[in-house]
Amino acid sequence: MAPGRGLLLLASLLCVAVNAQNLTFPPVPPPTPGMGGSNLTANPFPAPSGNGVYLGATLDWDVDSPANLSTRLGVPLLTYSIFLKFPLTDIDKTFLNKTVKTEPYPSLGADGQTKPSIMVTLEPSSIEALSDATFDDPTVLGDVVDMVRDLNAKGLYVLLRFGHEMNGWWYAWCMRPIQYKKTFRRVGTAVKSCAECSATAMLWAPQIAISYPWGLDIPLNDTTFFTRNPDYANLNLTELQTLDTNGDGKISLGDEPYAPYYPGDDIVDWVGISIYFNGKDFYGQNSLPTPNTFLDNIRGIDVTSGTLTAPDFYQIYSVQKGKPFALAETSANWNAQYAAANPNSTTMLQMKQAWWRETLSDRILDAMPNYRASFTFEFRKMGEDIKTVTFDYGYTTTPEVAAAFLADLPKRFLLSNGTFTSLNLRQLPPAIGGSSFLVSSPASTSQAARTVTGAATQAPAQSTATASAAAPGTAGTLKGGAGFSQSVANSWVASVVLGVLGSVAVFAVTS
Image 1 (tube, rainbow, N blue to C red):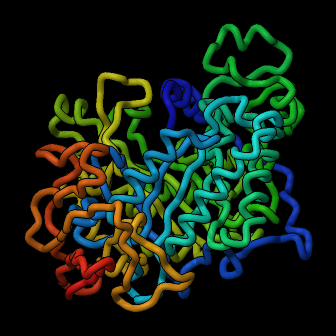
Image 2 (cartoon, one colour):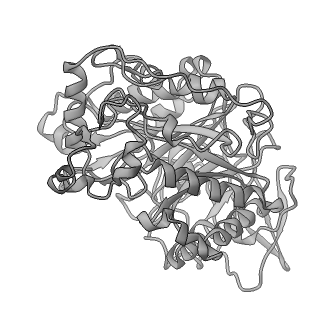
C-alpha cells in the first residue's frame, strides 16, 4: 500500500462501473519446455506437502515481535515478513541484526520437520536503484546475497519479493517494465548463483489489476500530463510506451496489466498478489465485501460491474506456469473514526471476518490448490489519503478479532511448534529435526530469559540486546495479548525457555 492513491482509485472504480464491458487480452505463452524453472515441489522454497499452506504476518517490528503476535493470536506462526530498501542501507543492516535477528523467531514447524521462513521485501529506494550504473558497485548484489545466505544458514527459507506492486504508479520502481525486469533478473541470478542460498526463492508479486491503471488514463502524446499531475511525474515515457498493449495511445483499462512486468519462468519461483479490502468508497465507510470478491478479482472480474477487466492471474501465472501462489499482502482496513460517528455501522469483527473468510477459508483454498502462502498485515497506520485517521489493518490487534480469526483458521495452515530462538544465536545444519535443538551462544550476546505461557497478559521481557531498539510493550500497543491458551489442534500451553548451560543455549517446548 502506498500514499496518495485512494482518491484516484475511487475515480478509477467509478470509471469501471460506468464503462462496463468484457475486455479481451492476448494469451500469455506457456513455459518453454526445459525453461519453466521452479514448480511447486522442485523449488528453493517448496510448497508444503499435501494441501498445507504457510500463514505469515507482516509486523511493525518497532513495537511488535513474532512471540508477541503468537501470544495475541493464541498459536505460534511459522513465518513472518520484513521490508528493506534496495540497495540495502546501514539502517537496514542494523535493523536486521539488532531487531529481526535478536527477537526470538520460530524454530521449527509443529510437524517436527518444516523449517521456519521469512518473506523479505526489497523496495528500490529510488529510480536510480534500477539503473545499470547501480550495479557498478559489487556490494549492491553482494549485500543481498550475504543477507539471504546468512538467513538460510540459520535454518530459514527465504521468500525474496523484489519491487512489489510494480504495475502501479505509486512507487519509484512502478511502470518501468524494462528496467524492473532487468533488475529483478539481476537480483535473482545473483541469488541463484550462490550455492549457499539454495533455500531462497524469488517471489514476483504485482498489485491485483482490477481497475488498472488505478486512477487517470495516461496519454502518451501529451507531455503536459506529467506536469499537471505530479503524482505521475516520475514515470518514463519510453517505458510507458511498452505498456500500451492495445495500441490506443494511452495506458488505460484494457491494457495488459501483468505480462509486461513478468521477469521470466526461469527466474521466478513463486507468484503472488497484493489485495486489500478498504470498505465502501475506498477508506470511507466500514462495510462488508461483496461475496466472492477475492476469487473474482484474482480471475479478473470486477465485482462492481461483473465484467472481465483483467487477465486471470492465478490461472495464467500459477496454474499454467506451475508456480506456487502467495497472497503476499492482505487485510481489511478498519476506520475507527467512521465507526465512532456511525455506531450502527458494520463492526470491526464483521468487516475483518468477512474478508478473511473471502481470502483464507477452506472454500477458497480448495478452489485454488496452488495457493500455498498468505501474509496478513498486522499494522495500525495512517490512511493513504486521510492522514488524520489511523486505520487498523490487523487480525490480532484486538482480543475479540484475534479469537474469531483463530476459530476460523483452517487446520491446513502450518504453525510453529512453539519454540522461539534468536537468529543471532543460531548456527544450524541445513536440516533441522526434533522438538528442541542446541545452538551456539556467542560470548558477546546477553539474552534475557523469555517465556510465553497461557497466563500471559502482557509483553514478555525484552532481551537486553533489543531493549533500546524496540518500543516497550505498554497498554494499548501491540506488545500485549490475550494469552497463549489455544491451539488449532488441541488446547496446549507453549513456553519458550532459555537456559544457559555453559556456552550452549537450549530452547524447548512444553505441552
